[in-house]
Length: 239
Ligand SMILES: Cc1cc2nc3c(=O)[nH]c(=O)nc-3n(C[C@H](O)[C@H](O)[C@H](O)COP(=O)(O)O)c2cc1C
Image (cartoon, rainbow, N blue to C red; front, side, top):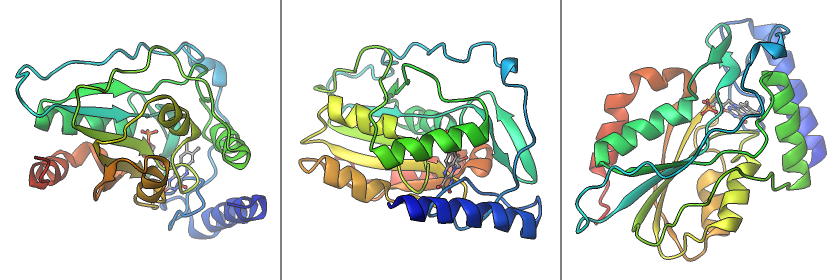
């Protein structure tokens, strides 16, 4: 995506917010179909653990070693985000909630992609950093060990949509961990862009994987989407 396009989308997003009022939702994204208000200034010192990455060992749930093993990998950001009608501060990111539904439904293991340096608490600052990283095709460093994926046949790969695409930390992960030969199932949470360019990007970046149809849930709807997500997961033919 060109720099001009990013700036144009950013302006369109802010303009729409002004015109359409506080009831609309969106990210700061290139392919967002809706708009959101500008957030009020927040005290960024309010976040005690900013910059302190969480641990990210694989959380093991699979007990039947003969079963086809599934790993749910995700990146998710808590902190300040848009919600219906304004700004909300998330204690748990939307995509992490969705990852939990999937893992619970399948008895799957989970692995969280954790940046070495946390993204800004402020939504606006995070948007700016994400835009900059996308323009530079950056590869932000990750915290912790990468997972051993050799024992998994199917990998669910989830992230929020940032500027219409996956956050660059997901690309860092894909550069580091080879998912060739696996069935990869994308999932996203978003503010209007759905799956964005994530499925196509995953297939391009992992040509040896089979990327199947994914699932997108609006971030603000994720708390009520458990049944919808479980129905989707159980409808997939992942043999
Ligand atoms: C930096 C940034 C960029 C975003 N860009 C988009 C976008 O392009 N399209 C969209 O629909 N939502 C966008 N959003 C909204 C997020 O995709 C949405 O709130 C998501 O549910 C957040 O998930 P998380 O809490 O797991 O990080 C953006 C949010 C952030 C913080």
